[in-house]
Length: 197
Picture 1 (cartoon, rainbow, N blue to C red):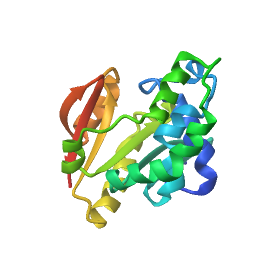
Picture 2: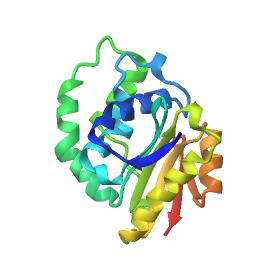
Picture 3: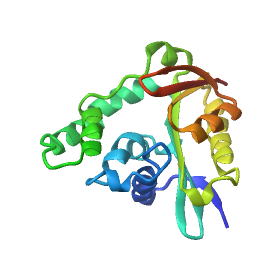
């Protein structure tokens, strides 16, 4: 049985685990990282902690295996990260010696987060991240999670959603394209997409 449901605080470990297991352009990034929370610190956990109302989880008999996270207001969320999320992590990872190259790349993103192009945020103020473990792929689970997120975003008056996909993630790019997102441009290995609501 598969359940799609709202996030609960006890899902936080699953957000970290799923993010790691899909953190290499949808492939497992576990072997790349000595610190298995680093990917989740950036792409999943802060949403569960700071905006849990905008997180939905896919759970089967073996446990949580997918999620969609996001925010209705990217600029406000960026401010909250600077105030409530990044400071403790920046202190925790002040000395990255002995860590893997992939770890150091994630730490650099914590120390100086990459900025979404301002014109994309202006046109599509909300953003999302979605990941599914392989056992849930090909069953329209991603489509159903996206529909849940879009429905609640529309009800909240959100005008548009953006996301960035790794340019080497062909499966993800195909999914977002057929799910109603328009490719906007590619920059620094990221394909930016937007959807008007």
